[in-house]
Length: 206
Image (cartoon, rainbow, N blue to C red; front, side, top):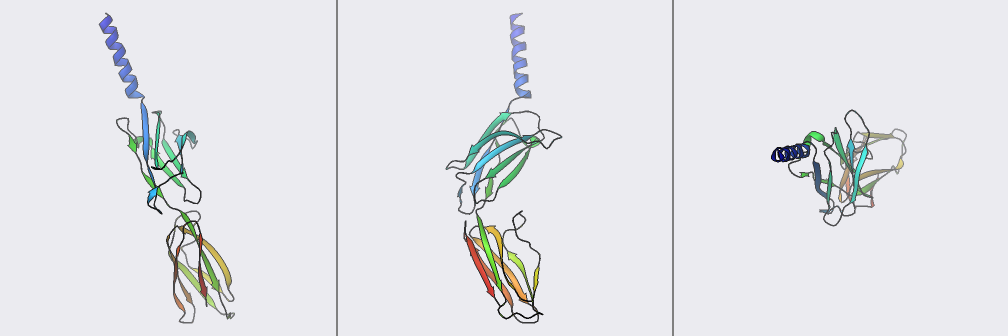
């Protein structure tokens, strides 16, 4: 009788552990600009219950010199999890991990990378403006598809022009644009490497 009770207890305990258990979500965050771990980055993990958009904070970690993070949390039935990774003057990351992508059998490893911010100062000056002047430029290289990014469409200006436009870019990478002045042979490409955490001017005086 006692043996039967012990076996039943062990079986129920195993079943409970198998059904519940804890997920471990871990990985490495890399600073691509400087090819180094993302020291000082803040990582926040949220869980999203099925059928809602509610973000419930599970935990927060500050990355050390090795750039690694690790969260262990109960296997509650959720739709997905979101990792939010931030640091001043770096592009933020919002990464989604679906419940169905996680396993109890081993650590769940998700590595990510981000870059430092820099800015291109586009300075356009028409030194001898005429009413009929038409100037246009279009970005060739540079950060794209981010909320802060400058447009990738053609920009057109008429007549006198003396203006400055700031465009965000990945640090220590090239920002360039092709320009042309309608009715003239004045056209070409202007470019510069935008220094991380700083503003680099690209001057066009035509």
